Image (cartoon, rainbow, N blue to C red; front, side):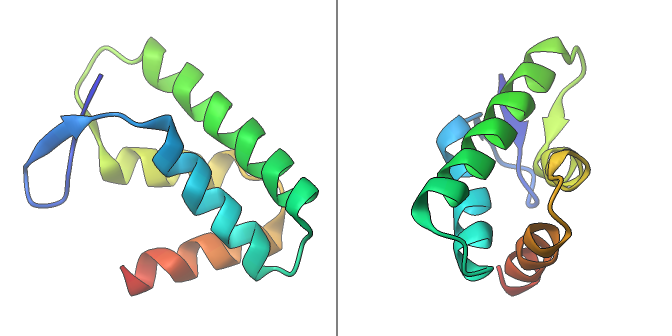
Length: 87
């Protein structure tokens, strides 16, 4: 599945990018490696499953919104959003 980036360029979807951003957000909440890995793994797998069901082109913004909806931990959501604001 192709993802349309902010500036219109497209690239292949990479689950590892979702995992890395969720992992970083959890680590920034001072969670240990195991908890951060669990949060990142569950979230990235759910996002990949969701993407596979989509028919229309997916944008990076769509993925970000879905990650925020999918994350259960409010502190991790806050750190994830903060990371987005910096990038």
